[in-house]
Image 1: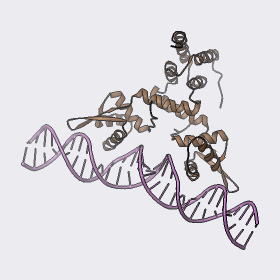
Image 2 (image 1 turned 180 degrees about the horizontal axis):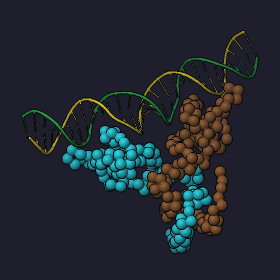
Image 3 (image 1 turned 90 degrees about the vertical axis):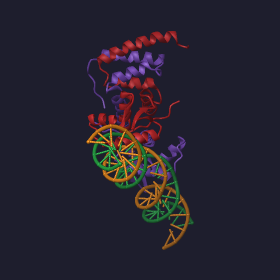
Image 4 (image 1 turned 180 degrees about the vertical axis):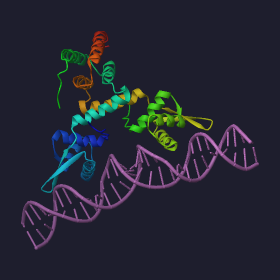
Length: 133
Length: 133
DNA sequence: GACGACTTACTACACCTGTAGTACTACGGT
DNA sequence: ACCGTAGTACTACAGGTGTAGTAAGTCGTC
């Protein structure tokens, strides 16, 4: 399965952009970042991208003189990884406990409750035919 | 509100021990860590504790020549903070979406489903009362 | 009163992150 | 063929983390 992706905010920000765009040049990443109020020098962005690549998190191909970056880890993978961390640390790995916690706490409003009841109904209906990416 | 607690695995490990014990000396923390297969030198533990203190995450009082450490951030707080991070990054801050995701994915077994339905039932009951309170 | 044990403080070092300047290179236009 | 511009690579530096050795202080014991 997956290693533990321990990513900083900025790294996550870069990945987010790559995920959203599919691929992007350093310049495009920089542009998006600026629009998100992360005012970084273009060279800073390049540096971070290089470092992420050195770690094997992303990769690039050259098109002319530009590098087009692409993530090697999927959003799903990182999401799962980060969620696992929380689940493991605070709920002993019990996802159900995490969900309970979330439902018990504020943050889940009546609409959500309805939506979830719906979801759970489906869930309890299906037995164990489950398979997706 | 709360700042973003960006904590490493080791830091989280130290906090876990302080949370569980309430307070602890460096030696006690070290002992617990060793029992958890984190074989670190006692001085390493002390160093980390000092640094956490410098950051304001924990504090200590002296008893004789020993320092007794205690966390200044609650488990709840850190949990919420880490959960927020995931929620914000991957679900646009929508806790309901996170819960849906968790329920849809594997990891929530039939027992959980039942438990959650129970929980949601209570939830929707009380929602009618303090709906717009 | 000196010694040793225990404990914290200081120092060290390698590696990662955030941040960015400067150097180098290659393409495109005139 | 040249030069500017765009774009990457290299270098730099401060601050954080993981890791730990060594120094220094203190308290009990003989």
